[in-house]
Length: 316
Image 1 (cartoon, rainbow, N blue to C red):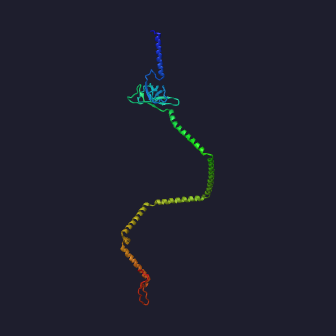
Image 2: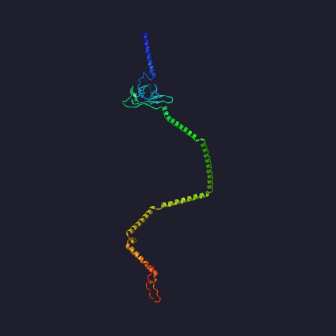
Image 3: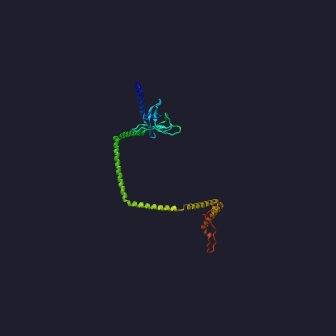
């Protein structure tokens, strides 16, 4: 069967178009000869992810990013990617954008979840997630450091300006005078130190005896403390309590008028009789002193006694 020139031209044109479509799709990362699954994920920022970036599961490359387009008027982006592996995972698995090192670009990784009955199917949309890359982390750490460094430089500049303002000519002269005075003071301290060293060296033996006496005193005080610690404090307190109890008993007896002393304190009649007896004894002693002849009779010739004469200084 012979084909006309027009048919051959049409077949060649269709073949060229098919090859063009296949090559274009292949360059975009989609192989038309394989039964790939296509998934979508929505992000507010893809952080530099580009088409043909690899798609991985647990570090294994299982596909490529096909396209990135705007999802709505708010600027959200939808990423289309394919998975050419039959590995099964849940439609709730995260599609995470990660990477962004000094050389390598961003990649897309699927963090698989395994949920029975919720397996991801072709054309499903997976939840998206952005992981900060190396540059972002370094920038986050360097930004506060940069701010602190700028603040420190500003403070240092302010301090230097203030110091330059303080160190005027008059202040410099004052500082020089202060330094000279300090030098004189240090020399005086040095002389006093030398004098003190001389005194200490001349009285070294006396100081040694003093410290020896102090050591002996400390030893004696320690022995005295040990002696005190051996005293039976409990027995001493018990005896003291007994003495105090006896005094309390005697005080109560006196207050109640018991015993001779108590009666003497409480019996008014006994007190009055004792007072009268004391008065009479005093009169007797006075009369004996003034008229001894009434009590002592010495008569050699048998004379009669003279009548009693009341003394002028007698007690009424």
